[in-house]
Length: 616
Ligand code: ADP
Ligand code: ASP
Ligand code: MG
Image (spheres, rainbow, N blue to C red):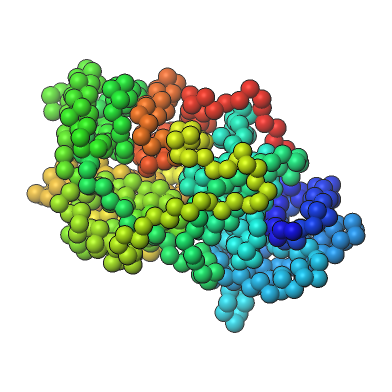
C-alpha cells in the first residue's frame, strides 16, 4: 500500500463530467489499496475569470485582496470533487490550505511554502478518507492568518510540497496532455511524449515557458527526492517520470526558502574567443558555429550581445587546449562575415583571452529568488573580481573571470554561501517509486538525447543599459537593485565591445525579464543612472525567447549550430544568444517566436508522425 498525492489541473476538473471522471480515478486508486491525498486546481478557466473581474474593478488590484479572490476558485473544486467521491460511496473530506496548515510567507500572489502541518491530513487518512486539498493557496503563520496564493500554476507546487511533507511514495500530476512533451502541442501538434526527463532538464524547460509543470514544483521534487510523474487524466497511459538525483538530507521547514546553493564549482582551464562587429543579419551565428562544429571544436558558453549600430558581438568559451584551433576557425571565417559596406574600423575582428576561469554557484532553489545571483555578484565585487561574462540557468549561475582571480573568488563564494570545501558529490541512485517499470530506470548521461525539449516564452521583455562602467561591482549594483524589487532576470549579457567614456571603459549590459516587471525595472534603473554613472535604459517588449534544453548536449559539438542554422534557413534573425551547460536560448522578434519554435523542433528531429490531441 502506497501513499500517493494526485493533483488534477483546471481542465481535468473543468465540468461536472470531468469531476465525476476524476472521482472514478481516485476510487480506482483507493480500491487498489492506496491512501490518497488529492490536490485540485480551480475548474477550467475560473482563475482567469477572477483575474479579469479584478481588473474590471481596479487597474492595480491590491495583492491581499487578489489572494482572497483567487483562492476561492480552488474551494469550489475541492467541495465538488469530495461530493462526487461521497456519491460513489467513498469517504472524503475537502480542506482549504488554511485548514491543512500550508504555511507560507506573507508575500501575496507569489508566496513560498515554509512548512506544512501534516497532523490533520494524517488523521483523516487514518480514518480511510480521501483528503481533497485546495492547491495554489496557503496561510501566513502570523496571528492574522492571511490567505496567500503561490503564483499562477502553483497547484503543482502545492501537490509536490504535500508529497514531500507527507513522505508520500510518489506524486502524480494529472493534466490535459499525455505527459511532458518535446514542446507545447498547442503550438506544435507533432510534439512527442518523453517517457522520462531529469529534474534539471525539467527545471529549465518549465522556467523557459513549458507551463506543463510549475518550476517550483520541480525544484521541491528535486530537493526532497519526490518521485514525480505527469500523466493525462483522460487515459491510463504511463506519462512522463521526472527523475531526481538522491537528495541531500533537508529539514521540512522553510521548505521553499532553505539553502538555495549546494555547490560552488570552478574550472580554470578555459579560454574565450570573441568576434566583434559581425553583421546583424540572419545566418551569421549559423555560419560561425557551423564551421566550429565541422572542425569538431566543443564550445561551452555562447553569448551574443545586443547590437550597436548594425553589427553584433559573439563570444564563446572553449577548453584552453583547443583555443588555438577555435581561434583559427574564427579568424578564417571573419573575412567571410565582413559586411560589404563596412568601413575599416567597423570590420569583424577576433579577440582571444587565453586565461579565464568559470566559477559557478549551483543548486535548485534559485527560481524567483533574484537575490541569490545578486549575492554572488556582490561577493565577487567585494573580493575585487571583475566579471567578464555571466551565464544563468535555473540551477546554476556562472561567471567568467580572470584566471588569476579564481582562488579568491571561490574562497569568498564558499564563505558567503556557507559551503564547505570538498563535500564530495553524492552518487547514490535516484529515488524511484516501486511502480516504475524497470525499463524506465534512469539512463546514464551517455544515452541522453542531446536535445530533450524546446520551449517558447512570449512573456519576456529585454532591457539594455548603455555605457555601464566595466569594473568590479557593476553587476552587483544592477542586479542587487533588481533583486531588492524581487525582479528575476535571465540571459544577462555584457557587450564584448568596450567604449571609453570620460576615460572610463564602458560596456552595454542587456538582460531579459518578465514583461510584467519590465517597466518597473526600467524606471528604477533609469532613476539610478546618474548615481551609478550609466546611460540610457532601453526597453524592448517585442521579443520572444526560444530555448532548447538537454543534459546530453554537454560535449556534443554542433548542437548550437543546428539551432542557429534552423533559424537562418527561415530568415529569422537572432537578437541575443545565451547558453548554460544544458540549454541554449535565443531572443528573436516576437512575431517570429512561434515559427522559431516550430523550425527548431523539426531541426532536432523531435516531431513525431502523430498529432497530440489537446482538449479545448
Ligand atoms: P493544468 O491545468 O493541468 O495544470 P496547464 O495548462 O497548466 O494544465 O499545463 C498543461 C499545458 O501545458 C498543456 O495543455 C500544454 O499546452 C502546455 N505545455 C507547454 N509546454 C509543454 C510541454 N513541453 N509538454 C506538455 N505540455 C506543455
Ligand atoms: N488555479 C491556479 C491558476 O490558474 C493554480 C493552478 O491551476 O495551478 O493559476
Ligand atoms: Mg498548471
